Length: 361
Image (cartoon, rainbow, N blue to C red; front, side, top):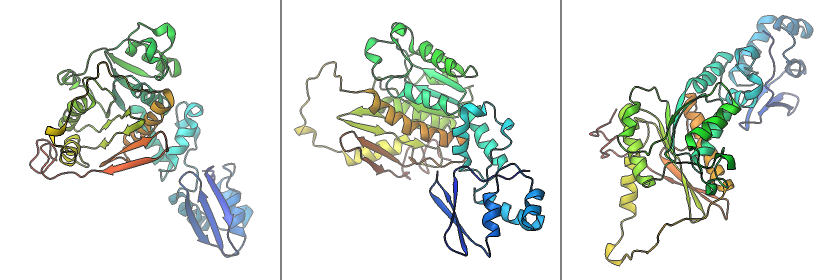
């Protein structure tokens, strides 16, 4: 073993007796008391080129004493867990992703497990438009290799300004075909199951025999509420984590909730709470006559939301990093660049996940 300081860690001597390790990725600080400058010399010399025995000999300390220090540093995420590099397929392509995961791992073996969980996962993405196409790209860039892509549409000229992966020569092609080609151009190891059909409550049953680790709903036909309920109920029945992918309206983007069946509020919990809070006097409502309604939208807005969803997805696929949007959803304001979150609770009376609910566990 040739110990190496994590490349994201800076070492600062606070004073004669305090040494600080600053983990720049997570902004965490670890401080230790030291008797003399020998510890500083040892730490700064952890370059991955010398064995423990060599380091101990150069610094006139026992191997056992040095191992105690190294075990402590490793437990705090201060030593590099990536070596040996040959344990990671395509390390050069995914180097930054692997080092990001390293911040959440306690050992080389733990890091291999996190990375393996992501690479072996299968993700279903429903809707390959302004959010879904960008989410797909984010996951492919993060090491996901197995996708089920579901969308009934063909590429149109009006898609190109805000959707990833489509070019003018794709116009008229099925979106599932065009996007699958882009993914495999990026990484030939990616496997794609293509489903060119409209989502409904029945089509999901065709995947009962598939092992699916995550479903991301980016479909808005017939509307987001309906598609969220279809996917939410299917996922609750099978115990599959799922994310409501978000949308764009009135210069606000919805950052949808993440749902872990049995651990967080489900889609029905969100629906019930919103219905209670948004009750209106129907006698005073007037219907607006709007046909073929199209709101303004552009690429940066859609890709921002997709990036947030992609980050949640990677946390879920790791199986060990807690996602941030359990029991809440957010709104991103394009004018102020502020994100505001609203909290939801898992309801005991929920017909899906409540104590008497159909999918309670």
